[in-house]
Length: 280
Ligand SMILES: [Zn+2]
Image (tube, rainbow, N blue to C red):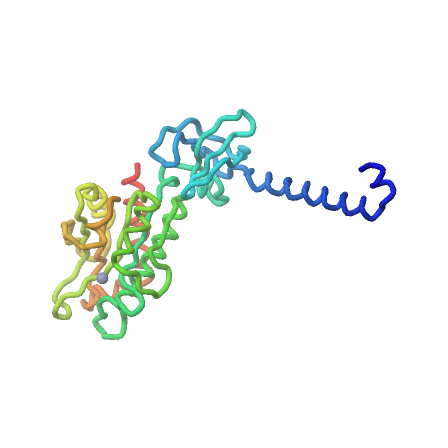
């Protein structure tokens, strides 16, 4: 081989290029499996969920080697002390989050009611659809929750129909801490009713509904309170789930708020505050 390489310069060059390419490939693969934690106090868990035991909390800048990946949770090894455990990848990699907390490890699913050909209820002026305001409010809530580092998954993020049966699937797949459905009410007669309500069905959702009831109490619309209703989206799901009716779209007074960015933003902040209490 050596003799052949000495005689054959072109062959030797090709072999050298191939060896160098293999070296670069191995180097890039090993780098892909390594990363550095960004926020402080990222928790190393015993299993890929936030309810598992915390083995230790790590300082910002801890170097980790990724051994496996599962639903956003990574099994990692600390390259300094060889300790192995699981981290929430969206928390460990978050560049804008300063300190990780239990809320930042939580997963929420937001369900903006209706969409596409299913317009939902129609506003008092006959010109606007419920589906527009459910999405606008859910998107603002997503932004608010993401400030805390929490993982937020949307059932829809554009004007499309999502079959009712599909809605709880995301919450199940990611073992979400809460699923929140956004809706606006409609009374049989215009201006016949006003106010907000919170609905749940399964017993494991009662605390979530009550916590959000309190956090939404300072909205400018009357709080009609918590009730149980067997709606499919909150009934056929094992995770805690709540459906919020955030005002009557065919009430002149309620719609004047519903359409305002400032009202939607207030709802978003109140939900964040409620979920933060719920998780802690
Ligand atoms: Zn609706």
